[in-house]
Image (cartoon, rainbow, N blue to C red; front, side, top):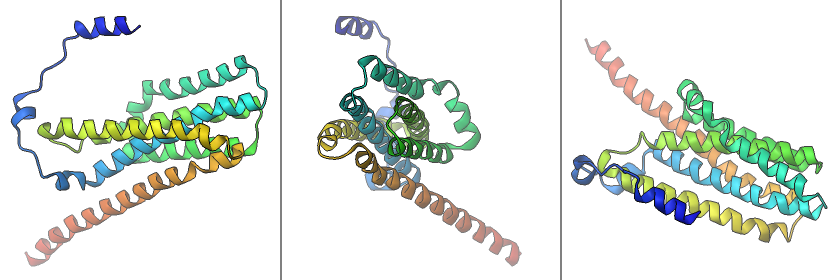
Amino acid sequence: MYLLVITVLAFLDLPRPTVEEQHGIRRPLGEFVAQPNLILAVTSASLSYAVMAFIMTATPLAMNHRDYAFSDTALVIQGHVMGMFLPSFFTGSLIQRFGSPRMIATGVVLNLVCIALNFHGESWWHFWTSLMLLGVGWNFMFISATTLLTETYRPAEKALVQGGNDFLVFAMAASGSLLAGVLLSVMDWWIFNLTALPLLGIIVATLIWHRLRQHLVASETIAPAANIKVGS
C-alpha cells in the first residue's frame, strides 16, 4: 500500500506556488489570526475532529466490554464511516444555501444527539445510530469550517493558515484518540460521553461570539451611512 501511494505521488503533477503566493503581501500575524471567521473555522475544525475521534475510538471498546460480537462492532463502524463521508455529496450545497456557521451549529446538534443516545441506552441500535450521527455531525462541522477558512487569507498567507489549521486539527484528533482509552478505563460509558460536552460547548460559545461580532460590524457600518443621510 505504501509503495502504491509513493508511486502515485511520484507521478502526481502538483501545482507550483504562484508568484503572489510566494512574494505577495502578508499581513502581520496578529491581524489575520484575530479574524472572527478564522477563529470560528479553526476552533470548529479542530474540536469537531477531537470529539469525533474521542467517541469513535471508544465505541468499539465499549461494545467489546458489553460482549458484542466483532461483526456487530464492524457494522457500527461501517455506519459511522458512511455518516462521515456520504453527506459530502450534498454538504457543499447546504453550506451555499445556509452558510458555514449554521451548518456548524447543525453539526453540533447532531453530536449532542449522539451523546444523548449513548447516555440513554446500550443496545446495538443505540451504538449504530449514535456513531452514524457522530459522523454526519463531524462532516457538517469540518467541511463548513474548512470552507470558511478559505475566506480568511490572502494568497501569501495560504500556506501558513492552512498548515497551522491542519496541525491543530490532527493534534486534537490524536489527543482525542489517546485520551479515549484512558478515560474509558476509569469511568462508565455514560460519564465518558459527558466529557465531550465541554468541547462542543466551546464551539457553541465561539458561534455565539461570531454572531455577535457580525451584528456589531453591521451596526458600525450602518451608523455612518445613516449619519451621512441625516447630514445631507
